[in-house]
Amino acid sequence: MDDIAVTVNGRRQPLLAVAAHTSALDWLREAGLSGGKEGCAEGECGACAMLLATPDERGGTAWTAVNACLVPVAALNGQEIVTAEGLGSPDALHPVQETLAEAGGSQCGYCTPGFVCSMAGEYYRSDRAPAAAGTPLPEHGPNGFDLHALSGNLCRCTGYRPIRDAAYSLGSPPADDELAARRTRPAPVAVPTDLRTGGARFIRPATLVEALGVLGDAPEALLVAGSTDVGVEVNLRGLRPQLVIAIDQLDELRTLAVDDDVVEIGAALTLSEVERRLGGRVPLIAQLVPQFASRLIRNRATFGGNLGTGSPIGDTPPALLALGARLVLASSTGEREVELADYFTGYRQTLRRPDEIIRAVRVPLPLAGISAFHKIAKRRFDDISSVALGFALDVDDGVVISARIGLGGVAATPLRALATEAALVGRPWNLETVRDASKVLAAEGTPISDHRASSEYRSLMLGMGLVKLYRTAPAESREVPA
Image (cartoon, rainbow, N blue to C red; front, side, top):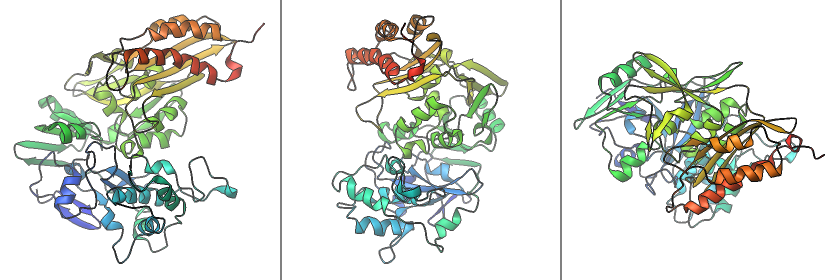
């Protein structure tokens, strides 16, 4: 226990007598660092945001904003974090804090520490640079600030314009900035952990083999990666697992490889890491990721976690179903590969055995020529989908030669729209075909009515999805009229 500690604002803090389920936010506030607040306890408001030192692609450190309310503090053993208090003080404000104050970016101040940490994460992004010739990218400021870095942070009284103005007026870190200098040094490596308190146990194994051994002996254990789903269960529903196995830092689950016939994505890579490392090479995933919750969530959430829950409303399954993805399931007896289309067997039920871990997601190549991800939700970002659709079609000489359509939110499981695919293949890629197939698509699944949408609305959105795909697809893919 004496060896379990976290470096907070430059000082090593032991985790003494902490419960296995205790969140980083609760631990920080009990330690007197009360800047971060609990607003929603489910990762939607950002008031709890903190900076976590994570490895970047160049072997250095990235300061990554994450939701402290969702991260088990035991998962931070050996890690390094910075809170709003660690960025500056009342007598010596950090540039982000000073700029926010000057721009009028805070009123009640409840959300301000979270905004400060998210803004500081972007402030320290190593490849942030002023726009060339005064032509910033969409939703990027003239200083290269990506406004999406603030997504997941809510403000009810200040309004977002002064906050945006502050973000867009930030310069580069000064030469003597310690956090900027920290970026050139490696991030802390994951530390094997075995914390036992109050009859509960939190384990971070050193290797996949060790993790599978523990899971084989205790198949009832709860696997945790980013904890963006489990953290909500702990905070709002009182989940108190007796044994947690943290797998987010296992090297074997954090690989990404692109070969001639497959893209393999490690199940424990965060969505933000996948987005950066793929660099748009899988357009359907490039469309999916920005619509998946907020940057704060994507900095922790993983493909393996989203698939492991078996949720019918997860955003990744429809896209991966359209891509024809397969899952690599690992156990102590070896690995097996299953089609994602066969993986879901019932409501939150899957083919994964209790002794198995999702090691990787495999996307076959070549990719379809036409692809899209449509998410229908009440908010454009940071919301759970009412309906999600993934499309992947190949059209040759004006005729649909292959089609894969993944659906979410319209049945007890994510599913392929097989009847609609059959209605498209072999027919001309024209509006008549699309309208006929749309009628079939509207009848796929068994949508229900709930607080997000009615069953009728969900069916209508299904039917409209294919029309939208046709309208936005490249014009050259469509049938040429005689």
